[in-house]
Image 1 (spheres, helix red, strand yellow):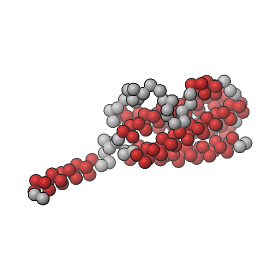
Image 2 (cartoon, rainbow, N blue to C red; image 1 turned 120 degrees about the vertical axis):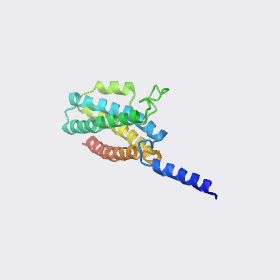
Image 3 (cartoon, rainbow, N blue to C red; image 1 turned 30 degrees about the vertical axis):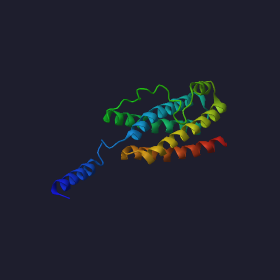
Length: 175
């Protein structure tokens, strides 16, 4: 190997290593995760906001408050990432989030808003378990395939928190 080849190789290695850990280290998976999770979290917040006026169960009301408190700031964080990456919040051709794991349909949301009391609580818990499982599935894919360390850390936090909340919701359904 001649001097020019060695220098070129060293510059390539330096560029790759030097780029590690910067804000530019993200991939399509990171972008797709942030975009989908913003919409997913927004629906969870919408669902949580239904609880105080429809539930009489303190445990369900408390859980809904925790969902909202956790997910509102995460939405802001993910929006900041997309802005930093200079990508739009929604994919240009993405007009429906029906294929996003765990998302409720408009009919399901409408049906939920018509309920109150124990019937509301049962249906809300069932829907939120499904919703959270969808978030866990998306977050696990991010942990496996994402590049950005901060995004992957949030994804792992989502997995851990939402698995714990799923367990809490399953317990509440048994009461």
